[in-house]
Image (cartoon, rainbow over the protein chains, first blue to last red):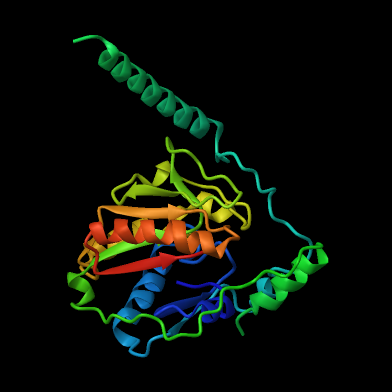
Length: 120
Length: 159
């Protein structure tokens, strides 16, 4: 799949299906499963219909009739989040779950090691 | 007309004071393998770069994180999460299928369009500025996993 035609062409993969939607919507619009199925079905069809290596299938969907989102895409100030080097959880609960799971594994490791250290 | 992202991104980050990014440009003919059997008989793999993880897994960090997550393809959609520094996560968090089309693929399997999904899908956080590290660290490990899954084809979903 591709949402950025010029970047995909530079990468030059064996085959690609381009969807002209805003970044972050590579495979469709939220909560529109019928549209998502139609998009993916047409994209997967490219596995059979594209015969020239490096071809891109242009999918026939537009985000909106006027495509107004295109005017401001990747224009304006740098709106990326800071590049933190620690895990960035979506929720506090996720962090707790992940850290608990890690603690459980660490405990299991310690128990296994201490059993192994005992003289036989 | 599709957006020309490369010049816009160059402009945006030059203005922000960064040196121009060295985009990967592949001029050689790409490797090519036609599908060996109809899609309806294929096992399809899924690889997505939008920073998707399952609650309980360690989340991605944002500084050239070359790790990946293994997500069973029978995952509960409501257990999926998204984290990334370079795209608007609002819709991915509302409905992960917009960048990780798991329900869509499952329904296409039910409808007989695709033969089967691989046991696992693979996800990473694609904001990795070292193309070399992707090529030498991440891609070979993903390939190994996909070969072990015995997939006939892979759907790659970038963000």
